[in-house]
Image 1 (cartoon, rainbow, N blue to C red):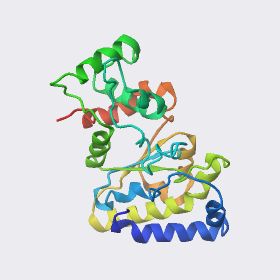
Image 2 (cartoon, rainbow, N blue to C red):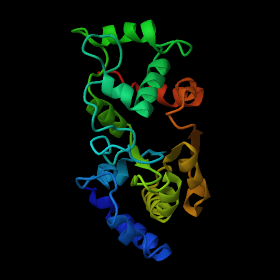
Image 3 (cartoon, rainbow, N blue to C red):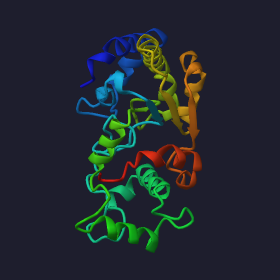
Image 4 (cartoon, helix red, strand yellow):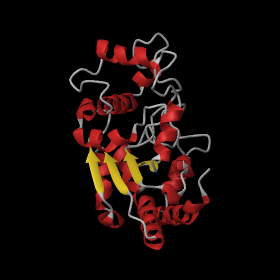
Length: 250
């Protein structure tokens, strides 16, 4: 599942978690958690050498089909647009964070007015997106591929979701793991003579990662979590993503 370039860091990270709390993994095995189907480390399919941005969200979606191990990539979503061209698909609208991320990208692309991102304004974009010569991508898999091509490692502060455990608690438990991931990234950058990737932290739980020692040297870009409507109008995010044209089909 994970690219081999990550194996030493992942092993060290899991060992560090066990050293901090030797009961964590045994407790985890005793209760339902997401993601399932061997997707826990799916984000690490992206080779370390290709990483330019480390995007960290809060935690997996709280639905089995949706939780893919890749932040904000909802496994229940395939089509981005409704078949009738009236807006985003129902499954995108159900995934609030993904919906707001896509709307922010449309604002960054100049396709939506930040003051009008729903109703008739969104219908106009969707109508264009569903025509035969659409300039827009159609599937969530295409968006994920574009993010990978831009060098994104799509992580969460907590790699698991449990209905009976506060996300902030699991986020704290996974900090030793992410510490080892950042140590490995810093070592790779030093050995290859490349710049450190930028840490993009979305939401308060992700922002807590600034406290871990290895994060100190990484450039930081911080924003509210995308489930907030204000994320759509976040100019820092618009400026970051605008040159990437993530929603364009070519």
